[in-house]
Length: 462
Image (cartoon, rainbow, N blue to C red; front, side):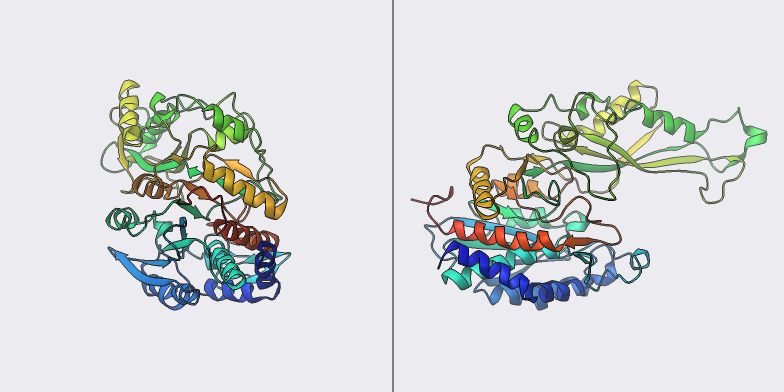
C-alpha cells in the first residue's frame, strides 16, 4: 500500500488497454452540445457512461438540471476532518465536422496513429476526465480508500459557454462546498512539460455593424456619392488597435503585470509543435514576452467580416457591413465596461453610427489564483515527485473556461492540471491526444490523489 504502487496501478490500467477501451467507448457517443438533435445523447453520456463509472468507485451520484442542461454530481465523503476536493469535467464536445477529417479518421471512432489517439473529445474533455476517474480508481484499489473527500461535477454544455452552470453553483453552493478545485481541461504549455494553470482569461464576443440604407446600388452610378459601410466599418475597427495589434482602448488594458505573474511566466517558454504556425514577434503589446502576451495581457480579434456577397461579388455598394469580434481579457479589466468602453471609443473617433451589441448572453470572466498560494506549491511538489519534471505554472489559461464560477461563486482556490497540448486540434478536425501525455497524466494524477490522503495537505482540518 504505497504511493508507487498506486502510480504503477494507474500505468497498468493504461498499458493493459483498459483505459483505451473506456475512452474509445466514450468517444463513440456524439455529445455535440451545439447540435440540438444530440440532446438525448448528452443525457445518455451521464446516465449510461459516467454515472456507472463513479458508482463503481463508491460515489453517491445524482443528476441535477438547470434549464435544459443535465449535470452529474458525484461525491464520496470519507471523513469530515479530511480535506474535500471538487473535480470538474465536461462530457459535451463541439460539432464533429465529419467531412473534414483526414482519410481513415472519424470524430466518433477513436483511432491510433503515430502515437496519437484521434477522435472528438479525446483532448477536450473526455480524455481528461477519464484520466482523473482512472487515477481515482487506482488509488482506491491500492489504499482501499481515498483518504480525502471527493466531489465531482460533470456538465454537458461547456462548449455552449456552460448554460445553467452559474445558476446551479449559486443554488447548490453548500452541496459543492470544498477546500479546493483540482480539475483538468485545456492544454499544457507544451506537449513535453506538465503544467498547472490557476485561472483563465475572460472572453466576450460582440457584433459591430453599419446599416447604411436599403439595398445595394450600382457602383458605377453611385460610387463616390454614397458612403460605403464596409470602408467605414474597416476604419472603425482599425481604430481599436495599432497596425500591429496593440490595443488602444485604455479600459481594455490592465494597469500592468503583477510581479509574481512575471516571475512564473519567466519560466514559461512557448515551444510550438510541428505544424504550428510561427509566432509573429512584432504582433501585440510591445515590450512583452510571448508568454506575457498570451497569459498576462489582453488580445482583440476580428473573427468574421462581411459586406456585400463574398461568394459572388457584384459591382455594387453594399447597404450593410458587419463583423463579429472578440476580446480576451485578464484580471484587472472590468468585464461590465468592455462594450460601454467600445461605445465611448467609437463616439470619440467619429463612428457614432457604428452599432455594437454583445453576440450572446454569456461572458467568461477573468480569474487568476495567486501563484504563491499553498495549493499551487503543494500540487507542483506532487507532480515533481511523480514525474521528476518541474511543471510550468501559468497564472491563467490563455483561452477561457468557467473558472469564475468556482473561484467567485464557490470561493475556491482553483488549480487546473491539463492533459492536452497546443497542437491537439481541439475544436478542429483531427482532434488528438498523444499517448505519452495520457499515460503520464494517469501517473501524475494518481500521485496527486494519493498525496491528498496524506498529512500536510493545505486544506486539512485540525
